[in-house]
Length: 413
Image 1 (cartoon, one colour):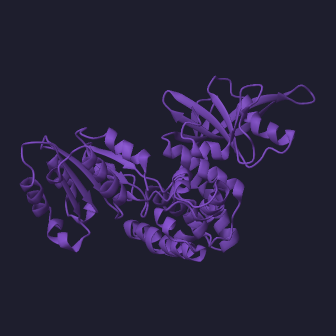
Image 2 (tube, rainbow, N blue to C red):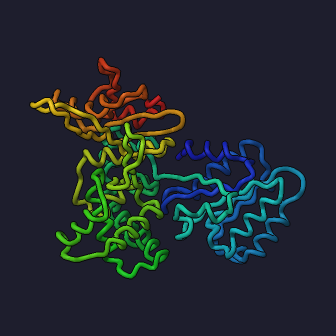
Image 3 (cartoon, rainbow, N blue to C red):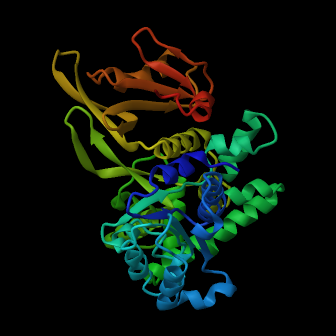
């Protein structure tokens, strides 16, 4: 399994004087990227085995190296002043005071450091602050649809059915039975991801946390704010939960990379709207497992997968709002708003994207086009559609087939 987009990032960041920190949710392939793919690349570039110091700190044979002083001594003793050395450390959080050890390595000019970790600290967006401005993050996602399809036996439509149901955690490629896939996903949601959040944040009511995750999973693609969630708890669960608790739990899910928040951005006003926002799951298999595979709405699932693909390609993604005016029957000007599914920024470029399952009628086409037509700038405007060929409309909007978008990394250029 080749994960070129992340390998290329590691290669690009080589010898930049910073600690390369590979982050991502559990089971997303961090160790494989570092110890298999990057190691293979170094060897192909003629780096001698003796110049690659590779340590799996979760291996019992390396238990002594979990002591920070012994790890530092071991590394220094294996580094000479000649040549370039590459230090690859997996599960570095098993070393006490690992930050000091790694920052100390940066004082050695001919050393380049790469690390992964998977405890609560490394499963947080704030890990990079531990390295005092000397950390460079490479965030790895579960398999994209393109990566998944490369390892799938069947056509793209069968691959879509499986991917949209069970997601892209790499382990699932080797699990052939659907019941086993579902069991694997349900188990790691409760026994791995939620437990990490509970332990890191000392959550006292795990049931509330689990219920909130189900509520978010049920509403992907919909506008969400804490008040709406409070009302759902009271109406559906018959329980009251404090506003600040909901906000804290949402932050915990975000910090653990389990979900991502897309903020609302007023395109014409050029400002952010604080609430409501949208949440998407980093992996659809985890989303579906948190609902016990009871709720499969393809329109929302398509939107979630498109959102993840945009993040993988390096875009900053917001939800767009476009204000415009129309005249009523009395010629009175009325202010209206239309939503743009995604406003995607990768300086200096911007793309506006709508997502649809189908465009069966002129009315549906008009609905999807309205917000794009109200934006008065020259940036690219696209409607990604599952069941449509790719073509341009007369006014320059690109109708882009979903599979062409997902399988061609240059489809937005």
